[in-house]
Length: 280
Length: 270
Image 1 (tube, each protein chain N blue to C red):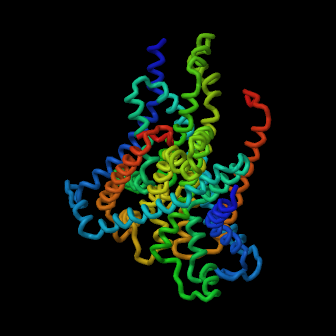
Image 2 (image 1 turned 90 degrees about the vertical axis):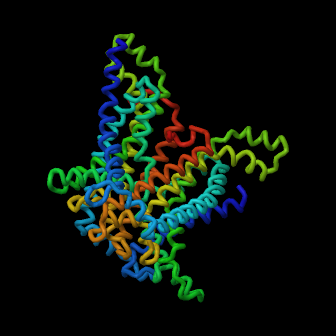
Image 3 (image 1 turned 120 degrees about the horizontal axis):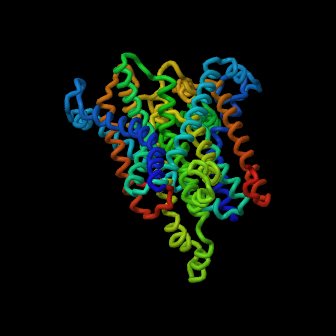
């Protein structure tokens, strides 16, 4: 009986394992293969050395810096919000959580488009600004607009995980801290903050990863020839004129490894596997 | 709640909703001005509905989302049961780690890696294969981890003695699965299906790299329409999508509210 079941068990997971090998492992192996070969498919590490010569390295640091800024701003805005939401009564809390989720369900292209519509030089904001006497300010097509676009797009991803962790904190723990002489500020700093670390970590990951690899936001809101690393990859794979799968693969590989390192470091901070159900 | 915290929340939500509200208001504008509301009209809605490319893209997206959600829910559920029953912890965690790769990788890397695979297959058979089938494969692949992750906890919560009891009472393992286990994990399967459907409907980046010229999804169409220019019929589309999501969320909340008020009757839906 036991023997018979174990054969069936293996068969159950088999299609999925086959699928994963074909469509997850094989594509990544092809990326590695392209990254380490030249146009004639001979082994070469030129794709990587070129990154330092043609300015790609600078684009990398710029993308990381932008994503870092956006993540920090998201955290600073979202943490108090999540905390305030968790202090409301149950019914208000549900409504507020729904309100923070709603924009997330809209496609990010439409959200970014809505933002660019509002910030356009001839748009509503600039018209209001010039009506009150501030003329000639360009909101869109600036690097700041790109960061704002990232914050605007990914803020809900920071609010929700932090809120879900804070709202689960045992009220008795907070009361105990108050009984033992903590004031409200100390309660937040010494009890709520450390306990909400898993939520902060998963929020940071959920904002940082899409920010660092975005390409639509920078094209839509940034200056004309402004590029982030996502734009470089997109050009190498989609533009007919400048297409190079080899260079694109090398950059993607570096990006992927960088992100995995960041996530591994982040996960060190919260040795708690209840965080987001993501196992590394 | 203190007045300060209320003010703060109002400010952040105003920030989140201002662009969408402005866009919706201007979708009723009779001119294509971005700053001045020159009069109410449904002109852009009429234009959107007579726009064949937009309607086709919407239908394409729905077909793709529905088929990829159904297929990935089926395979994902079977896989979750299979992985759950694995004895070796190492094999289990190895399979789970590989499964989770598309969830943790940036979308653009998943997108280009699959594009390379399809491009390679295309050169092998002599012509490009990008189209509906490559999109379907890509969507199933990135949906699978989400389905597995929503079914897996239900399997872990289930008392392992339940299927054993069923088999002691004369069920074959297959009968035990369909009569006992499936019933226990059904909520997980449904939430996985829903998640897969919305993720697939919403995806742009991976689709962008895996779609050819023959099959355009709604996000890809939106991308081609809004890149560095303003098209007022996209405002109308945005308004329609926003209202649809709002209604769906309200219905879901309302249903959850009623369910929590009613005394729980286990098994009433069977």
